[in-house]
Amino acid sequence: MVLRGLALAVLVKVCLSVSNRCLPGDDCFPTNLEVIKFMETLDGTLHFPHMASYDTLVVQRETIYTKFPFAIMEAKNINDVQKSVLFARKWNMLVSVKTSGHDFIGRSTAHGSLMIYLGSMNDTKVNLSSTRNPAGEITCESGNTWLKVYNEVDKINRVIIGGSAHTVSMAGYTLGGGHSPMSRMFGMAVDNLLELELVTADGRIVVANDQMTHITYPNGSVTTSDDTDIFWASKGGGGGTFGIATKFTYKLHYPAPQVVQFVCGYPIIRPGGQDIGFTVLKKMFLMVQNLPKEWGGYLVASGLPGANGNWGSIVLAMNHYGNYVSASRRYMDDLFFFHKEWQSFCYYVNRTTFLDYEVTAKDPEFYSGYIMNTLLQKESFTDDLTRFLLKELETEHTNISSFAFTGTLLGGEMMNVGAHDTSVHPGFRTALMSLSATIGWDTSTLDYSGLPERGAVVGEQLSTFGDGQYPNEAGKDVVHWQQEFWGSNYKRLLAIKHQWDPDNFFTCRECVGSESHHTHASGHLNTHPFVPAVG
Image (cartoon, rainbow, N blue to C red):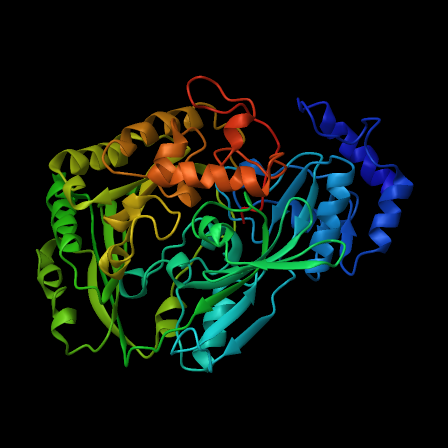
């Protein structure tokens, strides 16, 4: 079994150019006997390329970045993760880490690596008697999906800040910052993070919060200190750069008495060629600039043909955290009555709970495309931005591809957190929208040449409109990514990285400390397979 897995992985090696890690086929790579001995120490399962289970786990949700690890270790507990890190460190192997596989630039997989899969670690524990948060707290292992957690907290009449994509897991989402349809009410995921557990590059098990850092060493000795740098770095510094996160504890919140859903959509071009896109998009931008904090949600646009002779679409999909009869809910009536004759649809729906609203979200299981992002502040919403986005919607359209964007609404309570209280880009604390755009194509498309290159150009143009980018939804060709992703927080992040992982064992494209691997003067990184726990 191991021999066949090794033989397949050896084929991968010819495609790689790696300076200092042992790959299958290298003399330094562990022997079959060493791999078998390692496998026997695990509570989890080691999957090899000839197994059907490997085929299921290896595919990335961003399909163009599917790669082929030497083996996939399906962890059952933190001890499996620790043993895997120590084994890989002993043999100088590549390590990749995957939970749900939601990573847009391929950071959660690598050819020839030992992949640590966390998706089966999905226990949760609720504490409604928390001394740290009046509404209680919940502890979630990294493999939980947000829909599962939403169902768990709904049973106890609570809500939590999490992602809208139902199949997204805890780790990469939280470590990159984590925005939500309720972030305007309760902040980002990192603003609600009370504690986390992780395994460091030298196999230490760390439990950290804003008061202390507790370390258990591989030899069983323990230390506790009041140095909380690792906790701060994990609150936005990026997935897996500082360790493999296995468990998170979050604040819970009391639910609103009601959640009101509001969805309003317009075409960009009406039948007969009437172009209403500029008027509609500008109106929606004006609406989101002055939102009551009870409103959250998304502004979504697509450059695809619509029904009844329409072309393109612009949709504001919102949730109001409060009663239908409230003044804050009535704020959206301005859009509800805006050019009713143009609307494709426009409606309110009373939802009983946030879960009742959230289950209406749909996310594709797989996707292909080039993503880009920028954080938009109030001064960003200019006519130039409106024209730029409409031009891209109308012109980035081929027989195999199209342009679309999703603007996640920010602001509200997020602005009450200091620029350096967490490690996310300070631009998050002044932003009203995280705008992510995609040049996308069908997952069955084999020849998408030229589209990623075009995406890199458009992404750089888009970035000029805002201050900062969301690393979880940014492209793989960001120039000066240190400044774009973390701004003035990067210097401290890099110092913490050097303290906790001085050999840069955990690294990836556009992650803290990765400039030490194959960096061009332009700020771009060569393709290399060193990857951390992204998601």
